[in-house]
Length: 112
Image (cartoon, rainbow, N blue to C red; front, side):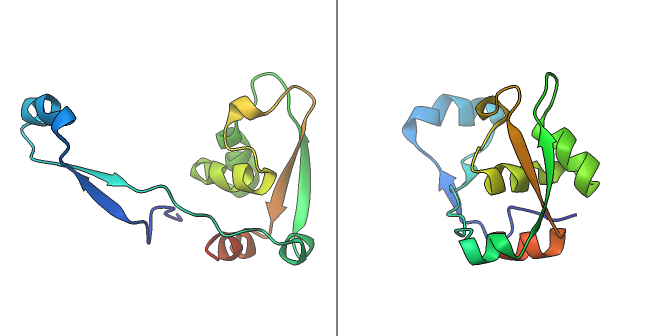
């Protein structure tokens, strides 16, 4: 399984606003992953990939599509990245969702 948190910067959050929460949990800080900057998917790279198409319908979820097409629902974010729509809420009924292949190449492009 691919871990999208590899090579992500982590910030120790000890802000005063969280003082009560930290005390209730018996911890001194919260580690948070910083927002990543994603590699741009250039037109040349996009053209080197194959695409499956799926018409968005009631009940669809990105994690379900990733499970069906990649065998791993945790890779939903690749489909979101490729389509430039970060969440299920960005899709409307009838939208075409593109599923990029082969998976190894897609992951290598996402990593930059």
